[in-house]
Image (cartoon, rainbow, N blue to C red):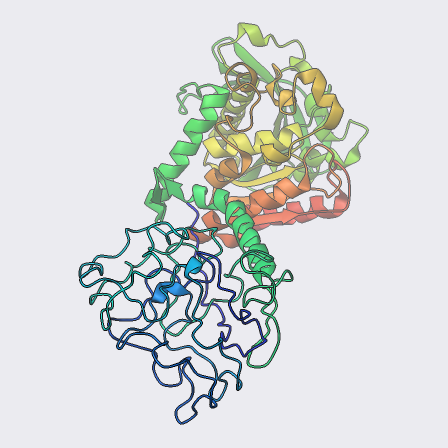
Length: 580
């Protein structure tokens, strides 16, 4: 889930204005609903402005002739209602900043009646206030001009204000978008509008009438603090925060199981099983097997190499299901060797490519690991090498990917059965096709203690081979070929949003076991941006399980390849895990 934090407290703009600094011209009232005090911030019953809070400073009277004529003020005890556009409680003009001599309204002239004010000296009829505790309903703003207002000339009698507690309820300000603060953002007592939360630039009062100018700033002048409009910055910060939260959503999902947080290893085991179920939804079910039943193996030939002997073998993995593979045995005298499962790329010659028989010599990792003292098995994947004529329509699997997983698990069964192999020191390595197959089999077989994948994956959202994908029916079409996962087409319509698993989840299912990814910057098949995002998503899982050093990735400046430097770094990583 994504959480959002409350916005920080915002700076206050001093609302004290001098004549000429955004004040209304004589006789020009505010339009209805413009510049009103937000919901819920009226003065308590019977409380006028405190001395210095918008009043003429103590001891400073109006110049002779500049005040209201006798009888032209408000009735005794009646202050302005909070809803008529007064400054917030406690915030007035700075001390000494009263109107200059002669700058008040003309004698006998109050605010025009058209803005909802009662004429000077006219109050509500007796008993016509709101009942105690009754304000406007929540979410109800001000009445439009002339709508429900006391008619001109029909005001309260002298001394009659609102009953105690009859202000608006909290949250009952003007509707959001009417130039006021949004409903539920009422000002606190003594607070002006926060910067950026007033009327939209150019909206509300005309320029010069005490509101935002078209540039979005309070007009400068005596007694006014001019501040820039900070709304664009706040919007940018909000958008960035939203993107970061969305970016982190996958990582959050990996540590969530049925809407509950994953906090322990026991929780994670449940989540891991959920991931395996999701993989099988796209690949088909993993067939049951008896791991104690050792695969039958026939040795066909042998070749001596540098510090090893290589055998070609034929293995029965299940009834009527045979595969061929290379088996490398070191020439040393160790009683128990670590072992590796080596999976080949998309090459017609299959297992021969990892022996260095293909044109790309950077992919001879089966032979190179044998030279380093590992027992290595390198099988053909269906439709490659000796299995080039494999009939996918005639087998019992729902995908070739699952057939490959089953074959590879049986290869591990064979390694475990050998007396010259340490059953607790087995890993897997692969490039391209072999790279993602190494990830898949490791998710299902926890006996594989270290996984090396080269140019083998990116998140599905980042997978794109360009125009060539059109011949497969869409961007994910290559994954839905017969030799991969056709259910992605027939069941999920090549829709990434419907695909039940992604690579970050599969890699997370491998945790806390060691994982090394070679992901070149210029790989045209597996976009490195999707790899980096996937590694970031998986990192919290490895952290939860206390194995952050087991998650490694390298990003060489190359294309779809396994360069020497990174490849030998991967071998060293394997050594640290399997040759302890």
